[in-house]
Image (cartoon, rainbow, N blue to C red):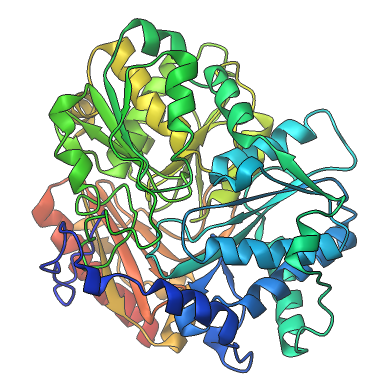
Length: 555
């Protein structure tokens, strides 16, 4: 499920190629727009909106400007007061051009509100999992004065993007009720012309008595051995390659290799906010997506030089695995392999620890989970649903089809309650070293046992009214009893694990399924589909899914 296969969205001829200088983002204009452009809160698209991964946008479109960050930072401060959260706030940024300006704006507000802020030493870039790790480490054994965090990142989105995410005291992405509170308060502040926003100049904020420096790198790297078997990586002398894709973990991989004496080659340590070193994604845009074969072309071309290679996206919460036997693995393939390996090689994990997946992830995971004798925990899209289970150890693993995952420490206690691309990447090396086969070869063994599912995702046009209708569908609005020649066994609008709304629809048969969800940013809906009966059956599923959804939307 990498590039959408909608015929109206053909693969761009620039895909997999470097973008010429004339096509790169204009950084001076981008930064100027951040400070100069003022969003109009009466325009829906220019308001603050928290999706599954925080507020995102671009200063060019007046969707991510200084006003947004001042308002949302004040809203976070107000939320902390509202909930009595008075421990330190850990803040991190990635390498996108808008991240540092947003950090400056946020710190000006946080310091003026008297928040004890922990910022990286030397203004180092900080991966999302390092923020989660810092929150969890600080809060361990505490019941009061708990820490929380902010990650300033638009994840793998294009270079003109900005993003702002709030992580709760459990270390994971804040739940919907929290983000809704912050979103509503921030928009009130925006509508009020920011008159209620407290702020001090950055030169004072960075030197305030409440602003402290934290060594995220050393703390995170030193603890990795409690998650990954570093001894086998060292003793096996397995050859590893990593491309940080110019992201926030760029200065983490060197210390990892040095501390654990690993044969780990960093294939590129370049950081450039235009991301000119990235080959374009399927649509001709630069996107630091480690699950895209177009964006990952430079690392895939090096696959035969290593026993295993991997990359992470810009904030290092997603992973991409390049196996010598097959090249870049589809995210769903690696999730299934990681689950199979972990639950077979972590004897200290609780016997009742469950397997977490989002409902648009592969049914191969269901089959592997059944083989392992574990419970499947299927939730809506959004990693926040896994955070409580990872925190208390009731979930051994949580993963989503967009190449995000996290899992427990080797002793069965919590490591990160947010996605951790670094540990997921290193796990591919651990299993290669221990099993003697790369992850793609292990997946092939699973496919030989359970069948090889064909999967795809398409985008279909939808008006805002239709998108709203799709998000509110009920199962009885699906009139059909069959899908692609098979009896429909279930129609879901809520997730099996927690009965939370999935914001769309999932239809399941014995050998196939599809899920339809409205896009949060475009006038489209997305159809995810999978079939264990081959590619031709998959196309039937997709065609009938679109007809079925269109009929439901028109009813």
